[in-house]
Amino acid sequence: MGERADIVVIGAGPAGMAAAIQAAAAGLAVAVLDDQPTPGGQIWRNVEGAAERGDLKLFGKDYRRGLASVKRFRLARVDYQPGARVVGVEPDADARDTGGDVLFVRKGQAARLSCKRLIVATGAYERPTPFPGWTLPGVMTLGAAQIALKTSDLVPERPFVIAGQGPLLLLLAAQLEAAGAPPDAVLDLSDPGLALTAGKSAAMAALLAPDYLAKGAYWLGRLRATARNVVQIRALGAERLRQVEWRTAAGAVGRIDVRTLLVHDGVIPNAQLTRAMRAPHLYDMAADAWRPAADRLTGQLDDMPWVHVAGDCAGVAGWAAAEALGESAGAAAATALGRTATPGRWSRTRASRARALRPFLDRIYRPARAFQRPDDATLVCRCEEVTAGAVRAAAALGAQGPNQLKAFTRAGMGPCQGRMCSQTVAAILADAQGRGPGDVGLMRVRLPISPLTVGELAGLNETEIKLPLS
Amino acid sequence: MLVRRTEPPASAAVTITVDGRDVRARKGESVAAAVLAAGIVPTRLAPVSGAPRAPYCLMGSCYECLMTVDDRANVQACMTPVKDGMRVRTHASRPSLRHG
Ligand code: FES
Image 1 (cartoon, rainbow over the protein chains, first blue to last red):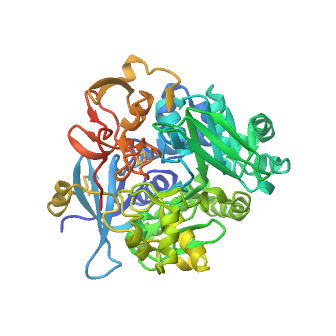
Image 2: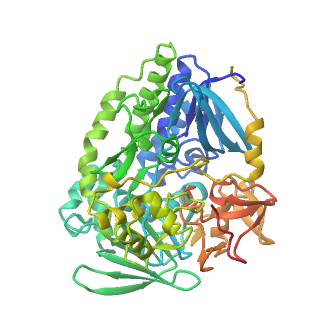
Image 3: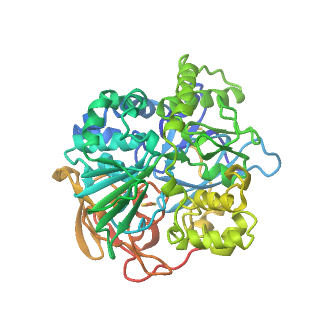
């Protein structure tokens, strides 16, 4: 085996950048692998480009702040490899805590990078939102629209509707309005008592939402004009989306002609890699999501001390907490390798403040029932086209767990490896068995975590890249 | 779908071909974003029903954006930045092969 990096960081969002800066400052050889072309993660996606374009104001204060972090990261002495898709991790064969190899694909070439410590900062992704018609061209996630706006200055084709729940609903509606493309309607799928359309949550949203919404009352007033609290939606069309149908709790039904529908139901940790590594994970009931079992400050995995997790992939808490936890994970990893590292003195305070808010946020932004308990005809697995009804039937036939259910129905066998269906499949199974999602578990994630071509696979055994730094 | 708020200045524009057709794109954006902005849907047909599909998440989770890019099949178009002269083929003409 060739030379080892001291630390490999996966992900260049707020947590990954902070971890890398911290470890590099301690004098260690650090490599950062990120699947995006530029640093910043999803929150600060293309912040350098937007600054160049003169569009920073469009996205608000939280986004503008990212520019300083990205600049700091650019100046840090790290081996930054953008466009690197990590497909797996192989711990050392002899002992589990001495390090391992990270396998990734970059520029069509597979490679492996050996390291003593690994920091996983893979962020979060949007909670899947199955509903009738969600696979039609024209239906996209809210996050997709935000990425398109940040990277390409693209806005949704009008008329368009935003549907779902979560703080991002307000934020994106405001950003799109500022960009000159306000939504034609907002369908609020949150619990009627907590709906953004309900008067009392206005103050709450203003208090809690990103500081872009300090003028929360103003935005909410604007939104209320177009927002409606509904319990179900359907996307209609043959070759592409034509209409959205909604139904209220009182049974009223309506339809809107649309070109685009953006859906959202909050975000969950992207723990695909740590799950594939077979690290133990916990079900967080308040967040209704799984996260790796790890030290809450250093991010060290309970079962694999050479691996740390940091940021939203360790439990969604937003960019400020992510940056702070990235810093403390970087410092902890550096300390473990015999260096002195002191995380910024505000790290701990900022992290705990952000985390203290979380239970409250989780309570007012509960996942939408319409998405989490889809009707029988709705596809839950987009890749293999498996309906909720087929999953329920397999559960009724006695499928014991998510893995058996996958074998029965093919749900989760497609290229996305269950990213879009495993939560829903587990929830349906839990309902059928009268158990909680925490007892049912999720289907296993296999290596590679994203498909490899035969050529890439062959390359993996031959290539070993060395750190230019060491 | 998506429409351009502003056209990229000449210095920030590149041209790719999608199913043989010239498509102007903004430097730094993904192939999937460029394809959506050009209104090219569907980009894929579902393996069992042949139902139309298009890029959905733009962040690498859903795998709805698989296309052939410069002769490499099944590339995630939302994770692939455009490059001048890139040749893209959507998978919209026949149901894609099953994976797994
Ligand atoms: S659009 Fe979802 S993976 Fe590319």
